[in-house]
Image 1 (cartoon, protein in one colour):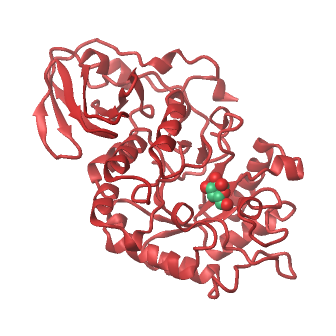
Image 2 (cartoon, helix red, strand yellow; image 1 turned 45 degrees about the vertical axis):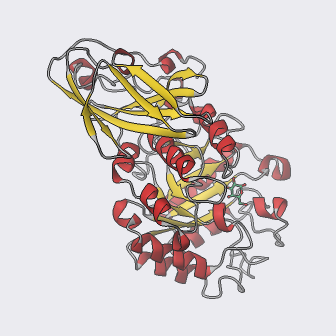
Length: 421
Ligand code: GLA
């Protein structure tokens, strides 16, 4: 497979290095279904409503709130119903059915409701016979996994109007003896055979380094265990993303899991840092809070268009950690127009000064550069060093754009040295 080749060389100084712009990146063999050319954006029921809290009223309210809050206009599209939508058993024809108590109108009607608001609808399924909630939450059901029913399930989803499938491993190796790439590829092919465009997200929690094999199979793959609404969980997850920048491309994204922005357990500053880092990583932005009940601070974070624009921009690679000084870190990613997006992260419990020099960001000394603060909306001239005081457990996020003096300076990111592909 092509996956043994590096995806791209850094174009972080692209505005100044024409050769960088004209050298095509080595192709990552991404799933060729024409979907998720930018990281998918939407909402998923799991992080807030979990298993027993989800029902059709909750999903409808999320769709309504996605519109009313301005999230749809900011780019959010997919309303994804996670685990626990299923009736305890399949029907007489072997078809999945919705739980009649919590989804009395059925899944097709729910998809229609979402579509009528200019949004798209997503659903959860598993390749084995047990969903994760059956195992971990004792969800009472039998045989509602897709094992042995893959074709009928793909057809059912397409018939209902599903636009996004989250296909979640849930121990299918232990329960059915399945192998991950084969089982995930089987559903990829069956979804394609339906003829309906369906974004395909897979999840095996990063256990077998899916970034090394999943790009031709899925539009996104989870890289870690489940996210929790704590600072420790966020930091643990980003530490695992730091080395993954060579492994994503349009149509094939690393997924550090759904957002916890606005969920109980995270303070506003922590949510802001979370959103900024996910954007810098070109992560799917799937809100995981109660959209209908969110406060204004949460809404403002989720709809910050300048931060979203960083997430949706592909400058040749996802962001990566340039510097790790203990609690002070510098993350950066190249922007397609030749600029750089930067996150100065303070992991600690006291305010700290964080600085990074132009050279480290791949910016030529002679160019005139401006740094726009994406959370405070201020633009300032960039001096030789970018320096900000960053509050505890918070970030400064900046977008740097330059003009003038071209230079042949070429910056190498740390992950250029990755060879274990
Ligand atoms: C796993 C996934 C979660 C969620 C639950 C549902 O834990 O990682 O995101 O889908 O299953 O049971």
